[in-house]
Image (cartoon, rainbow, N blue to C red; front, side, top):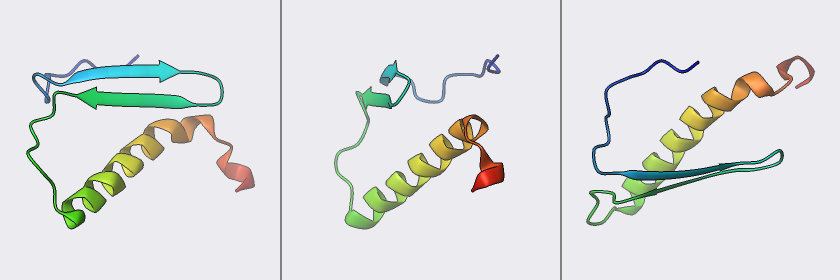
Length: 64
């Protein structure tokens, strides 16, 4: 069970689809006007890292 926390993204809308071979997450209503290339790269890396942490329990890390 996930720990309930105070909303940190007020106004954002999340749509998550979970299947056996893929997970899709779409977030709309972001408060972003524009991003520099460096900001977009950092955002992508941070999203990758946090999703990897969440999904790691489903992977067999013993055989990696």
